[in-house]
Image 1 (tube, rainbow, N blue to C red):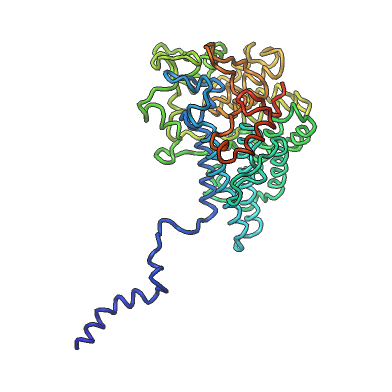
Image 2: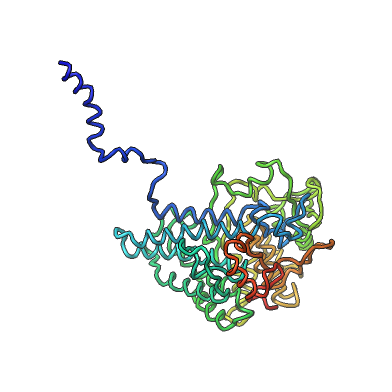
Length: 478
């Protein structure tokens, strides 16, 4: 009888363990899987890049300062272009290499090895990953110059060499062509895991061509032949470009953490800190032009006017305009590439003789698209002003397009900084204070790279003319 009771007592244990090969099977953390599907990795790469470009934390993103969209109230390191007190270059470098590009590389490997995917779907997913890689590398190469590229992301090579920036750029354009050629618009992509386009591959075609137009125009002053060929190909069918706001490449944030727009974490009302106000440089120009986007961009003073703080100097928060309620909303989308930018690029392409068309019409379409995106009326009246009209707004097309594109690129600090370096407009000047360097033309290489990959980093600095913020990148020749 005792033996029977012991057997009955042990029966549940025997049943529970009968499906287990060994006790090791119990030592599994279900919340930390050993394998990750490619879809969430692609989503994460989109989000990390969106966060990097949209946050306003001075430890990670200072591009709005460099183009004088905002200025500080108290701490003047950033508006006076200090890159070493905080590890700003390191933050961007690590974010894109160690988070975005590593995840994209692994996602691409997993998709490639998935034998259950139809070829068209597999090609579409790989193409979307490739386009996001190109966008990400484009930020790096147009920020630092020469960068690790051909030897990057290799865990067995912690000291990669740096590739020539122009060589990288030309390879990115080739990768764009290959990705675009492999897309089948009617087939599926990443679906809901694609936060930007929801898996709509026809929109990825427009994104890819628009990105090609954008990257090619960066090298227009130094390699007009290559730029013209790429621009003409990208613009051969305007229906394959982002010329309507319905096709904008936007990252839709949510209203609650951790998926809210990170800018909202560092400004009122979510934060008690009052570190940032609008810069007088931008607000003064918009005031002069009676720009109807001001209420969408900035808060107004009690009398209904808009005022920017003096750029590069201490300012009183309550006495100046700052980010509008629209911009600080937790669910305000991040903007990677939009119709206004593309239409400005098309206007520039006409002026350079890269494509046929009417530059003024593209310019007007760009300004109108910006107004529509920000939800304001009055584009026609705005464009009719002497200071805005394409016929009278400036003595050169660079001035006309550069000034208006700068206004339209509000809250997109990195892209506005790139265009300012390309077009040399608006005519920004550094703060008139002792010891302030010139407005940065690039970020210096991260300090840790000079430690862990010293020889290659030093060689890269020497190759571009010095690892200095004043060193112009290869395409910045004017």
